[in-house]
Amino acid sequence: MRDRPSGLHETIYRVVRTIPSGVVATYGQVATVVGCGPRLVGYAMASLPAGSDIPWQRVINSQGRISVRSDGMPDSCQRRLLVGEGVVFDARGKVDLNQFGWDGPDWALVHEAGLNPLPDSGQG
Image 1 (tube, rainbow, N blue to C red):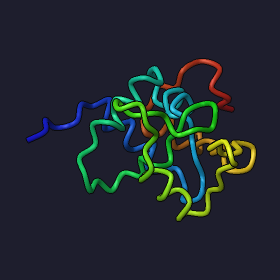
Image 2 (image 1 turned 90 degrees about the vertical axis):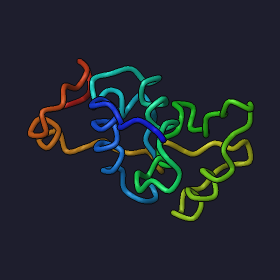
Image 3 (image 1 turned 180 degrees about the vertical axis):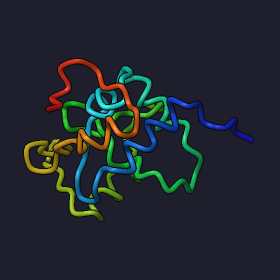
Image 4 (image 1 turned 90 degrees about the horizontal axis):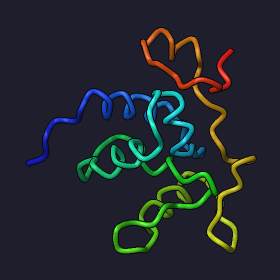
């Protein structure tokens, strides 16, 4: 049985739930909103139980690629889910972040939720 998610993981999951279908965010984008490092976002995504309703598949690396797993292979399930949402990968396995990248959260809602974004996060 898995432990309950930490407060930080819960916060990360709240942010990830706001990423719309057909759009991807980077680990760094989510980290900036939450006020943590990108690796912590990766750890939170990796610790989700099977069947979770968190749209984890919408979080990819800053190169527009699906990050490799512990076995050194990208997650084919993640790609399948994203393609099913209309996200397009090029022949090299990259997503065009200019076309499919998340433009971020509503910053008013971020502050209202009490999140602590990192400096230079583009908030207005």
